[in-house]
Amino acid sequence: RDQLAEISRALENDEFMLFFQPQIQISDCQLVGFEALIRWNHPARGILAPGQFLPAVENSHLEVPLGQWVLKEAIHQMNAWKEAGETLAVSINVSAQQLMDRRFADYLESYLSSHPDLNPALITLEVLESTALEDTKRASNVLARCRALGIQVALDDFGTGFSSLTYLRTLPVDTIKIDQSFILNMLEDVNDRAIVESVIFLAQRFQRPALAEGVETMAHAKALRDMGCHFAQGYGIARPMPATQVLAWASQWQ
Ligand code: G
Ligand code: G
Ligand code: MN
Ligand code: NA
Image (cartoon, rainbow, N blue to C red; front, side, top):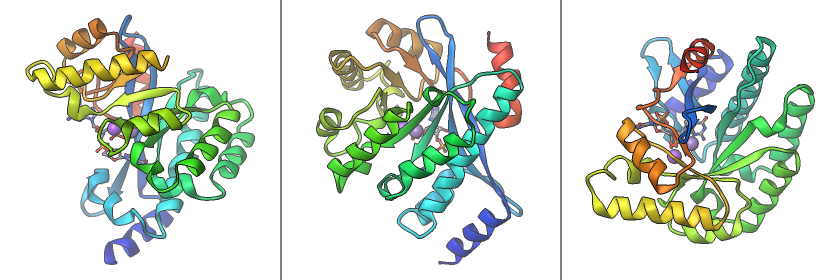
């Protein structure tokens, strides 16, 4: 309760910020985009990670407004980079309640129309499997509308939900993100490795690229490449960074 009031004030005071973590194509290490990750720049406690405040926001009246702030800010940032001469793709996390909001696709459409020079194909919405739990049909319809706007969709945390295969079959998605819990120990744990290999195979059969999260070392990236995984994200490439560091990071990476 108290924390919600504080979060509401923080929204008004513009205390939230986005960090960005690079995503690369494994075959040639080319930078393909960044995932936007929210942080709370708390006046007394410093920069807080999502685990310290998103649980309170979940299923509250602030879930949709905070999610909209993220969308707006990410698009605003992409536009600023574009004006600085860098065209960068950004993946944006979308929560369950946000996606199920009746006006979600309308909001997106209006943010896009206020930035007419921005290519919608540079935007990916990361949707959790569990999002679709309540109403898969509705989620499919909203995502289909977003894709009709030219936006891409990624299935986030793949494999951690209760009905992964059903979502894969039902939801219109462009990319499958393999959850980091399967990646972290895959070099030592034969079972994790079997799961990762199988998910990559499944993605290939669905003609969808897979993106591995939690790529903490180059040895992970190499093993994933040999398994046919297209994209990678993780501390082994870079940690999430503030927007102010993104352009410098991108230019030294090339
Ligand atoms: O950045 P970090 O690894 O601490 O993020 C922890 C979790 O918070 C991740 O699962 C991520 O998906 C989630 N998260 C980060 N930013 C956002 C956001 O803007 N919106 C939503 N809904 N979840 C986010
Ligand atoms: O939305 P999602 O749950 O995929 O968010 C990714 C989360 O994973 C972020 O909180 C990010 O900080 C975290 N993360 C990103 N790369 C790594 C990594 O290599 N190792 C670990 N342990 N966490 C990571
Ligand atoms: Mn994500
Ligand atoms: Na994830």
